[in-house]
Image (cartoon, rainbow, N blue to C red):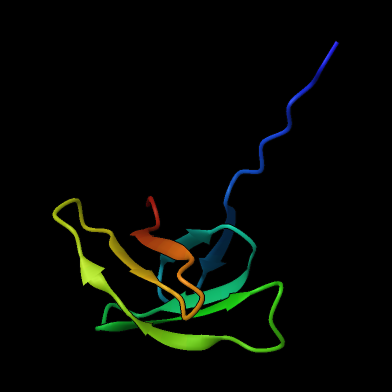
Amino acid sequence: MLAFLTTAPAMAENIDQQWVCEAKGLKTARYNGGSRAYVHLKSFRKGGDYAVTKNSDGSVSGKTANNTPFVCRPKAR
């Protein structure tokens, strides 16, 4: 019997700003409602600030320097 494992995107909650971000291999992330988000992936020593696109559903999305997509959504209240 073969079993296939899939890895769900990692999530990071930004408690101060009420946003939840997710990306494959995510270590930490911060978004404060502006034009950029800080994203740190586990496979890198440090993270970076990346441009985001605001989406019609209220989320924002972008890509890191190595082309890893990420999305941040308002935390459910």
